[in-house]
Amino acid sequence: SGALACHYRAILRLLGFVGLSPQSGETLGRFAARVDEVMPMRRVSAGDVARVMMNLSYGPNPEPTAHDVQTLALYRSRLDRAIRIDRGWWFYTLRERLRWKR
Image (cartoon, rainbow, N blue to C red; front, side, top):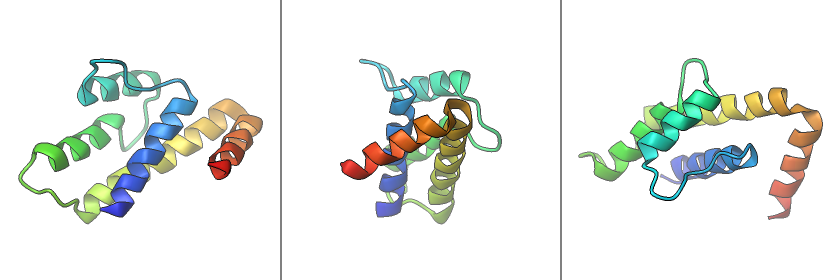
């Protein structure tokens, strides 16, 4: 689904802005666990996002459900808010300006 891919790319970009990106040879599950250690969220986790992405790649259903899209949208929203609160208004504004120039 286009919406799911959009949310996933945005999540990876947000994590990259705070210095979290997959390391060479690191599995998606291990990366998600590392993210959850550094930036724990309520109600949804990076592990939830990883499970959705792995189920789509390796599970019996290649199409995302509405719940899958909601999971990624919720995580993206909470991550965005956590970065805005933790890093401050200036960092958030700079990030948004750089995003629009791409």
